[in-house]
Length: 119
Image 1: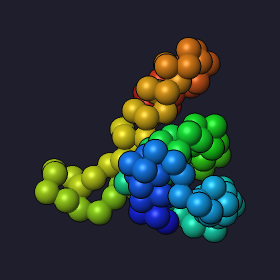
Image 2: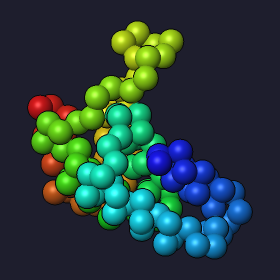
Image 3: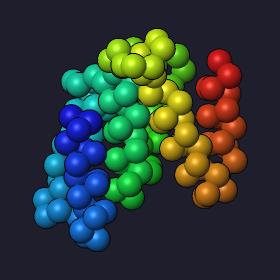
Image 4: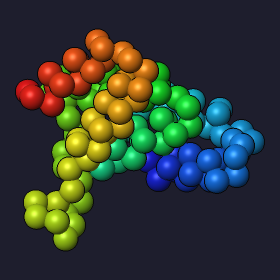
């Protein structure tokens, strides 16, 4: 699921226009994630948050984070990789969310993320 969202975001960005029908598909995929019918590991969560941000859907990325990833509900770390301890996407999705919250000047979201990162 995260790979599909990543491709939609990347191809849409490279084309300079959304792929026809992609908004409806993203809506359906996001609903599956928010209803917890599909769960992601931390790398998949990071890819999904980034893709939603790239698609101009920061509110959806934030909603996904707040409803399914925050307050200690972080997904398991990702697949083992060459890095020590395997991949952990939490830093990546925090980075995307914090960057956009700072760009928007949203101090409450920034404070919330910093508290989550310190927990």
